[in-house]
Image (cartoon, rainbow, N blue to C red; front, side):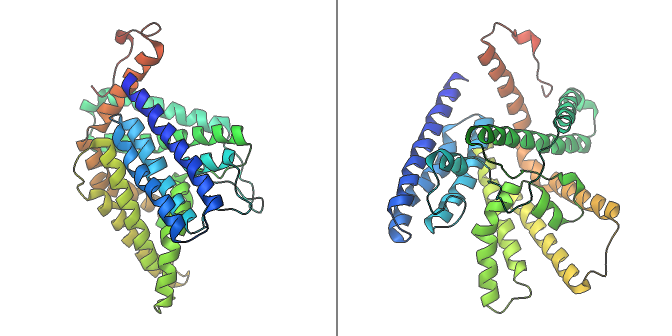
Length: 347
């Protein structure tokens, strides 16, 4: 664990130094080939940085934050677009967290969304603790029930990690940030789930980098009414590719294509949903409770089929548990917790 901590310090020091350089580049070099040449090596570096880790936690977080979201923000900055582009320039103290963390500043013109109550977080932490206890009996539980628990576990952990980073940034730079999730279990359609509720920082970065350019091209090709279809398909394809990259960095297994298949399937399904809604012009509406159950059921079932198999093949659940125990021992230095006092429910 000590070696991984050293790697973490080294990698994120490189990230901060690179972003300091990018901040100067954006001020000095105008949009054009010169800026592309100046920024492109940093994008390549950010894609490779997670390979320095063997820890799935460090590799996964760095892949998501840096190799995906940060590189896409830098691509937009190359063309003087996106959250890092501003006139006058964004101060360095705000530029760095905006570039390397999954956050988005809430604009004054937007309706201020209330922060979730402490009770909301307490409930979710309690559920997560119960899930961890359930894993101790996984040998006696149907595999599909365990996968359902994994689905809920992944959502809760992702929301808590992102909320933690957002809280730190909010306290340091004193700005209001947009939420990362909007209660995805209340989704009533795939459009609602992927576009307005699930992991909104990904939607916010894929929209200007993939969806909007592809839709613009499709519109110029005479597909104005259906321009959203190729844009949706391209967006989900890119999302699938980036998830394959993250899972490769986590498990170091040869990509199977299942992650791309999962997101392409949802891209096609969402496209069908768009077509049906356009053709029916609002005449076909299911009760919210019915559409909600169908939406969540479809997302969960397809994740069992395509999303979780590469996760399980890499034994990510076991590795995650072992790393957590190793981290506890490292932090407490064997004084507050003896190895016999902690156990892994996956083992």
